[in-house]
Amino acid sequence: MIRSHVLVCGGTGCTSSGSDKILKAFEEEIQAAGLAEEVKVVRTGCFGLCALGPVVIVYPEGSFYSMVKPEDVEEIVTEHLLKGRIVKRLLYKETVADDQISSLAETNFYKKQHRVALHNCGVINPEVIDEYIATGGYEALGKVLTEMQPIDVINEIKASGLRGRGGGGFSTGLKWQLAYQNDADQKYVCCNADEGDPGAFMDRSILEGDPHAVIEAMAIAGYAIGATQGYIYVRAEYPIAIKRLEIAIGQAREYGLLGKNIFDSGFDFDLDLRLGAGAFVCGEETALMTSIEGKRGEPRPRPPYPAKEGLFGKPTILNNVETYANIPQIIVKGADWFASMGTEKSKGTKVFALGGKIHNTGLVEIPMGTTLREIVEEIGGGVPGGKKFKAAQTGGPSGGCIPASLIDTPIDYDSLISIGSMMGSGGLIVMDEDNCMVDIAKFFLEFTVDESCGKCTPCRVGTKRLYEMLDKITKGQGTLEDLDKMEQLCLYIKSNSLCGLGQTAPNPVLSTLRYFRDEYVAHVVDKTCPAGVCKSLLKYVIDADKCKGCTICAKNCPAGAISGELRAAHTIDQDKCIKCGVCQTKCKFGAISKK
Image 1 (tube, one colour):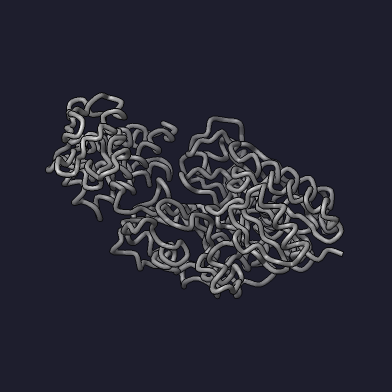
Image 2 (tube, rainbow, N blue to C red; image 1 turned 90 degrees about the vertical axis):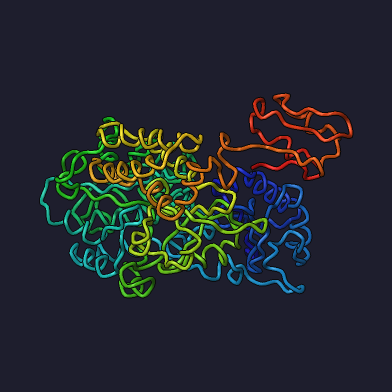
């Protein structure tokens, strides 16, 4: 009889930190200790606290071991699993206080979260269909096929208030209804798993930790609109997600949950994978469908919308991974349950990939309407190193920067749009006082310039010109007139681009101009970068009163720009200096600063 479960995170983050070695070590040590019949080792999906990997949780105690190394495994097996003594030195520090061990749910990172889309991640083995079924999996599919008509399913999703979690926030139920109303000999259900935002890993984690939830939801969607075929478009850079999807699809077919006559209902539905080559533009629905068709991934003009003419010219619905992950629970628990969470116009929860200048890097799922302050200061644990919070970027290259003055903004679709940002797929990058907002805008513009498919002139040429103007400003060559020209160009690109990539590309520039204009002015007028980031405007100087003449800076300078006698103050030749910062890093006396 199994008395203990050892859960080892098998998400990409922990896997890259060596969790596979940890899992193998546990299996070997448990076997050697004679506990193989009593202790089960389970590879799960992501627990959320990615910065603490490799992560191991031992149940029934719920002991959360963080940053576990292979050499720690023997101690955990001997002390905890054999002798019943928890290894406190390896526990996540927030679960230990005054020798009292609390549950993970009581930590700041978790206590304000509400896991819906992520409810199985870090709980079940995603490669075993029986574990998904044991948590209620495929109950929703059985319910819709045996108790509900297609229009009943659509009305339930509409009543829940679920909106698309991939960017625009369109009503999921309404999208399904539009496709349902269009008659055709063939319809399709597509899943956008082509997660391309820098710093985003929400969809990847769901696919790695709970792939059957997406498969079940797509089958439900197929029944609702009258489709018999689905496609999951997943980027090829997600090997773990692809492997687990392949396993899950195979298991679902074997159990009769995909294929012909599912649940003896007469309903047929099957799924196939299509691998994306990493083009950001293929996150746009028509470009994604064009790519599935085997053509170059470029957007198509709308109308007609995919609900009428989508994949292969047939009625098609497309939702992203997180949107689908909510569907089974809405069907089982009811629309009212889902609608009870969130705000009036933004129902349910939202998953965010929390990164940047933050203590608790990882995956969080919070009710809509939670403020940015709660996410940054409570869930995220604040900004490290005593630095001040400066801004948060939501929505990736399509979003905008939220300044510290708006840190109490509720995170929901309408609130973010009103302040010049957007929800996007859920990336949330925190920035502190050492970030230059002009440089941040330039970074995202460079990304969109590279990712533009080039089909329409406003995006292909406009974003390139916009990037060149930003580059000019970061080099101290800009003028105040350039700021006005940039705003005009941003508005032109937004109103004339063919698809969402071009229409939202100027958002990082517009939001930083709106909230951090003083930084732009400093770059243009004073020829300085207040954050000390833009190399062309930097100058490293040595304080003669602090310099001890130890010569360490001169010995480490790769450009030979520092000179001076032993035990005498040194100087930096600004013409030779390449602004690498090595001198400041090596100086033990704090004599070198950048201005």
